[in-house]
Amino acid sequence: MSQEHVNLVVDFTNRVLGSSGLDLKAVTEDSDDGSKIQVRGDDVALLLGRNAELLDALEYLGNRILARSSGEEEKVVFDSGGYRARREKELRLMAEKAAEKVRTSRIPFTFDPMTPNERRIVHLALANDSSVITESQGNGENRKVTVRPAK
Amino acid sequence: MSDGSLKEVVETIAKALVDHPDEVAVIELEGEATVLELRVAPQDLGKVIGKQGRTARAMRTLLRAAGMKLRKRFVLEILE
Image 1 (cartoon, each protein chain N blue to C red):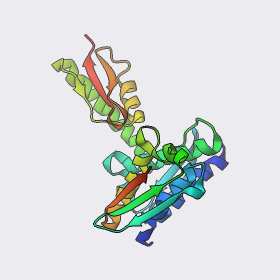
Image 2 (cartoon, each protein chain N blue to C red):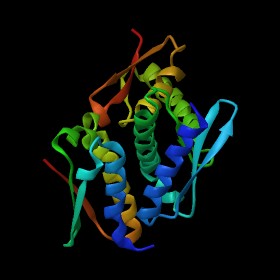
Image 3 (tube, rainbow over the protein chains, first blue to last red):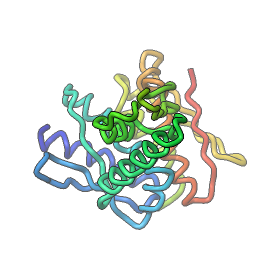
Image 4 (tube, each protein chain N blue to C red):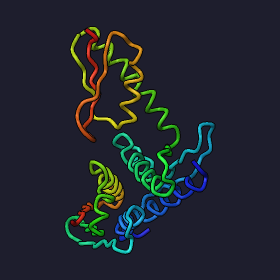
């Protein structure tokens, strides 16, 4: 992904945030695994509330703009502080707890709806656990992960 | 920052996504909730709604967050 394309997404996001009245600003952050867009400001509570629904919305819109301008499939990640890493850790822990519960109770457990990326984290967290199987069910924003006993 | 600019939020997003930005129009209707009516060229309708309505939902999420700050409710209507 070129810096030029990332800058385009940052500019777009800041134009949207600027008109929104929210005290939030996007900046590019270069890391080892490519560019990331960091969103910061006084309204970070509104950004990260409801499982970071607004951060995900900005990421989704930013990637629509990126796809239109670059024609590539590559995606840019939006983060705020260490939110994505914190959430991943939390999801892994939830996955382990759910697996433990299912193992002892033999009753399937279904999570609340999650985004594709969050579901992927849960599936991966339990991929090597032979005592349970995981599957996604439902459509669109209502898609949920279910953990079942393996046999 | 003025609060009349959520119309601009919708306009900025829609214009960036469609093939015919000149045909993007947003009308603001002040009521109990502020209704933002978005009109685009017929062939661009899918672009502002998105797969499984995700683009429209992302815009509504933004309006809700901004509305919480302004203590006002905003409704996005996409006209066919």
